Image: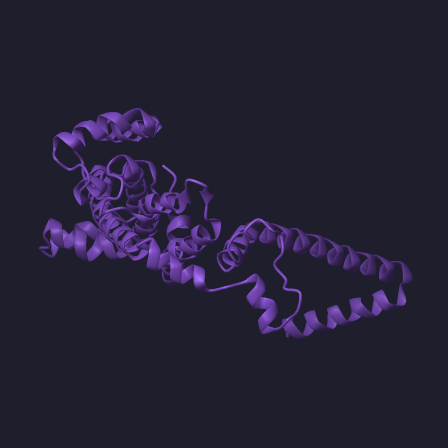
Length: 312
């Protein structure tokens, strides 16, 4: 009955609006205002998307350009035929990247370094976050905020001490030197702790009553519930190590067998200038792993970023 009465009232309101020219004009003005507002909003979003996507589009098109034409702002061929496209674009740049610059070795090294660093750093951060979130011990809050305070120290300040320690340990120009110094992820500990504080303590107490050990509580209860933030931290850590240039340049020798993509791309610069077409071709390949990871885990990433900001 209430639904029928509501529909009847709506019909009467529409009929009244049709009979009242003033009300009809107001409704029409509201409709046009809403249309104009949406049009402006969509236009601004389209412009923003174009600004964000243009560098990516420029990189892809430049990667296929003929040598020496990278900075010629010409992307449309004179004629839409094979001859027209072949004068402007070529796929030989992608072949040359692997044939002449040993790019596959850089690619494999980056996969090894970024994957191992992300796996171990995420694991350690998850364990530390659980301890700071759910365990009680003396000076817990003091130690946590002390760790967080170290995030304010610029990375360049401890680059030299870190390098000296790594060299004295015999890890110069080794995988250990590329991976181990960055396994302590304070930001990851902060993310994990904030997220795990939202997990009810009653679940942990119930598991203890059922005879579960600390390891079982952590692996069976905490880790599955914290999976969104774990995946998010893994992606962020992988991205950091995938694109980390300074440390990978400092800790490796020129021409080393463990050079990664960020350092390897520097060798595309010759004595007479940079071969931009080849650099863009290599860059196209370098974004593939990150694109695949984000496409596969985007739901976890979005959920982790939204739920990770838990208030104190």
